[in-house]
Image (tube, rainbow, N blue to C red; front, side):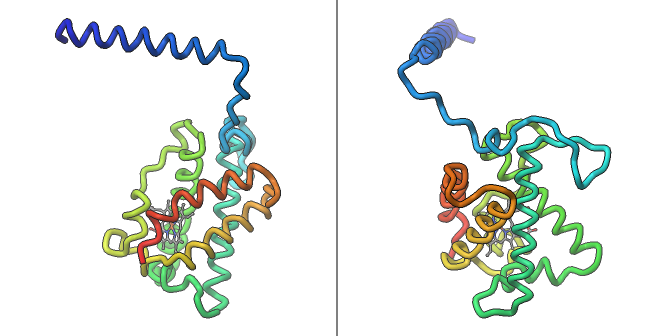
Length: 195
Ligand code: HEM
């Protein structure tokens, strides 16, 4: 490393140390809000109700419950045959049979749980999301398991299911936590809606 960059680096380190200590000393500022993940139970270990003998972070378990309830609502939506249902989007997944379908729905549940946990403050490696980015995941040309592109109306419906699933798992609509979760969902509308 050249001397110049060494100096730059040490100046930066010193500056960031000062900034850190400034913010620590500043008692006038309101305390920063806890992450959504922490508010859903965070890294506290609890026994996993679906895998006997195993432990799971409470934050991750909360998200997994919401994700699985959401998947249940989507399957019910598809089975209802109502107009505007989400059938076309999930058709490739549903066209799979037996173990293949069950395995892929389980994978989707796992990926969605990782995605939400990782993006709301779940830093433990167990929550690392390794699927496609949101644009690619929802583009049938890049993800053949996405049947057709999602519209704004589809997105609003999907978001309503996540909200209902959160309600069913103890996050009431009139709470700050719920509002914060909806804000995260809304931030994903633009990349996911592609028609
Ligand atoms: C809150 C909004 C949403 C989030 C956070 C989300 C997240 C995800 C994630 C993480 C994946 C997995 C990607 C991978 O495995 O590589 C995925 C796949 C998928 N999503 Fe979404 N999604 C959302 C909205 C929607 C909407 C509105 C639809 C359709 C109406 C949709 C349909 C699908 C389908 C069909 C797949 C493919 C399933 C698969 O690859 O196994 N998603 N989504």
